[in-house]
Image (tube, rainbow, N blue to C red; front, side):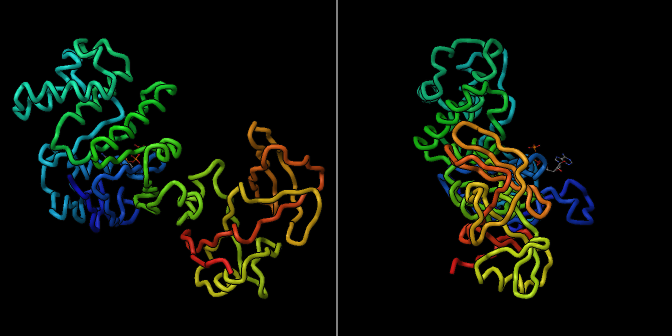
Amino acid sequence: MAEITLKGLAHSYSKTPASHGDYAIRQMDHVWHQGGAYALLGPSGCGKSTLLNIISGLLEPSEGDVLFDGQRVNELPPEERNIAQVFQFPVIYDTMTVYDNLAFPLRNMNTPEYRLDTKVREVADILELTPLLSRKAKNLTADEKQKVSMGRGLVRDDVSAILFDEPLTVIDPQLKWKLRRKLKEIHERFNITMIYVTHDQLEASTFADKIAVMYDGQVVQFGTPRELFEKPAHTFVGYFIGSPGMNFMEVSHQAGSVMFGDQPLPVESAITRHVASASSSNIKLGIRPEFIVVSDTPSRNALPIQIVTLQDLGTYSLLSFTLAGQLFKARLPEGHAPLGSNAFAEFPIQHISLYIDEYLVETGYE
Ligand SMILES: Nc1ncnc2c1ncn2[C@@H]1O[C@H](COP(=O)(O)OP(=O)(O)OP(=O)(O)O)[C@@H](O)[C@H]1O
C-alpha cells in the first residue's frame, strides 16, 4: 500500500534547462492518497506520461522528490517500487498463452505454483479471460490483449499502485465503457491506488473519484468532476471541462463599472472591487454555456446579441452568438422558445467567475 507524494517535483529533458519552457514538469507538489481512484487529465504534451514515468521509476526527476509512504524512492528502479504500469499499447508476450502471460510476474518473483494458479484464475475471472487462458496471446483481439496487460498488473499481491497511461486507446468504442466499469470494480475490490491518464474528460470522470487536471507541466486543479465543472480553479479547466467549455471575457475597470469592450457588464459588487484593485491587466470573467439566459425580449440585465448559429442537438440546442465582437456559446434547454432576429443574453451574476492571471479569485456571492 502506498501514499505517493510528489515534493517540489520538476523535470526537464534538457541537461541544461534555461527557462520555464525547457521543463516538461514545472514545480509541483501533490499527494495521491492510498486507495484513491484518480485520473490525470490534460491535453497532449502537458506532461502526463512524464509524470507517470517518474512515479513508476522509468524516469528520474531532475528536481524534487518522489515519496512512497514518506520514503524517498527517487533512486529506486521500477522493479523495486511495487508499481504496475499499463501502457497505451498492450505489453504482452505473443508466443505465451494468456495463462503464462498472467503468471509471468509471479514466476519472476518465485511464487509457489499453487498460489500463482489461484491468483491467475482469480484475475482471469474478473477480467473475463477464463475461456482464453490456454490461447496463445498472438491470437487475441486488441482489447483482449489489453485486458491481459491489465491482468499482469493485477496478479501481484505486492502492487500498491497501478498507473494506466491511456489504456483504452486501442479498444473498440463499445468496449471502452465496459472496461472502464471493470477497472472501477477492480479498484473497489482490491483497494489499490489507481492513476488513470487520459485526455478525455468523460473517461476521466467515469473512472475517477478525483481528477488532477494538468496544463503546461503543472496540476492546475485537483478535484471531483463536479468541483471541476462548478468551480474551475484555472481558465484552462473552465475551457477543457464541459461541453462546450466555459466562455471567457477579457474585462477592465472604468468609472466604477466592469467593461467588456465598450459594454458595461452587470456583475456582483465584490467582482467590481477586485477588478478595480487588480494589479494585473490579465482579468477575465467566465460563464458556463449552461447558465447564459437567452430571450427575444429585452430585460434589465440582458444585452443585445447577434445570433450566429442555433444547432438542435437533441436533448439541448447549442447557440453561437456574438457580443462586443466575441463569439459565445450557450446551451439552451430542450423546448426553448424560438429566437427571432433580435435576441438578448443575460449572464446571471451568481454564475460569473473572476479570473486574474488565469486563476480563479474567490469573491463569494453577496
Ligand atoms: N524523451 C523525451 N525527450 C525530450 N522531450 C520529451 C520526451 N518525452 C516527452 N517530451 C516532451 O515533454 C513534454 C511532455 O510530454 P509528455 O509525453 O509527458 O506529455 P503527455 O501529456 O503525456 O502527452 P501525450 O498525451 O501526447 O502523450 C512534451 O513537450 C514532449 O515533447
